[in-house]
Image (cartoon, rainbow, N blue to C red):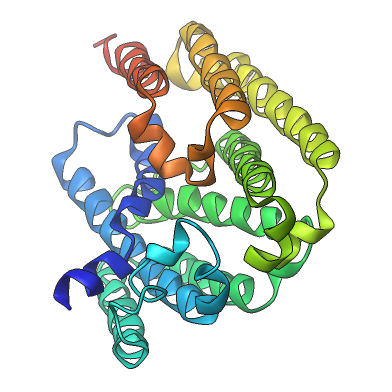
Length: 296
């Protein structure tokens, strides 16, 4: 049962919370081990609270998950984790995350609380509302980015929250959420609405159009960020412009996978399992580190 309890946390989904490290990376403070330690604590606090919301979601969707070819293998849907145990596990995990968050300051705790409440609203209502479902997912990523800055402010008050970070995060997350819906719609076929109610309101043409818009906004938003006067002044270089091809390739590669692979129902799994995309991400991170930290 311990294994089932751990699997119910969906630890593979914790990779989404790596976005918390964007604040320390782009504020050029990643060499400060004390701040890195705070970011790591924030990562685990967010991951635990997110896992609590995943358990709550799985409890509410247990019947629909049992109809899904992959989700039916989840700990709760498969019956490996009793419902009563899951109902106890969720609040305990959330409490553990909250206790970690208290150490990181009021701002971080507030953002985490908003994230948790938003997830509860999403699970109870928004996930069945066309368009609002993907917007809610995107806002969740924006909150992660904000939290990554908030946890630094108590000990590094000069850390600034770039509005461009929020813009790029929002459209990038929106692109991933729409990709997930497009793949779900294609895979489910005639059972789409039984597996996820909101899919009844989407069509392939609508999702394809929205994917193009969000992909273009993601690439253009990031490109503008790299050459924005405030960005150039902050980093003392325009060299971030040379990281745009990594972002563009990553977006295009993911679009390709939406059409040919069923793995895009789970963006976290794609990042790990698709070698070209993983190499692209590592290349991007290496380029950013060299540009921001290699100038001495």
